Image (cartoon, rainbow, N blue to C red):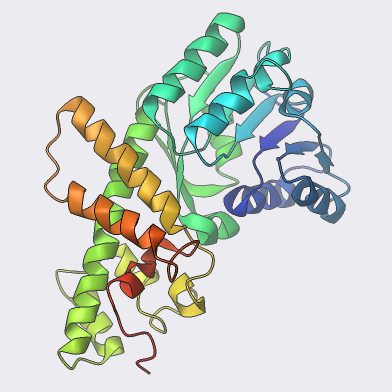
Length: 313
């Protein structure tokens, strides 16, 4: 499918960076229609890219004007509202032949509900789950991992890959509807537990007398090496670009990690997968998200919640 216009709904911390990448990389003759509950955010983007970005008042307006629509929203209830509400939603527009790409991390039940409802309303429309991984930094650098709920034989796969490759450097076809979300929840469960374990290990080693930089080098060289320790180390000053080195500002909020771990735990229970670490992991993020020292900050702030030393240098 060729497309002449793109829509994007949800220009928060992640969505804003994704829209900027589209504006920078798309041919100038392809307009980008955007919408968000925060109208000042859409106006700011439209002013910065006046030749390509058009701010819209409703999701309906975005869908009506776009061949391909992407959504990036906080929770399942927001996704359901944007797609299915009776007034001003995506489904209230004509969706004949359109491609709809849902990039949020939500529960699979809501994803199934939205997909089946849209199929009944307009069989020629195509709806895909495509959750992303990499946080705000990955969105800014267009290095997101994108987990696509279809296989490579899908008739729209090449179009999907072309659009999503402007936002990430690793687009993976996960096999079928909702399997992108299954993959994302499994990944975030692993990422969340690794962040806690890395925080615990760094704190333990530093209290034992290790210099934090040397300990990080040991983990990098040893069997404990992991992406969090190497790129998003919870200890301030280890990774200069990491949120921990900037007061834990930006990044992937602890409240969102709590949500995702909860979704992963629910999925595990539904499919019969035993989680040994699930309960303690979820409790840690729940408690951190309620701690005034950690609220609204990057999820690696669990290091602070655990009592880790931040002014060690």
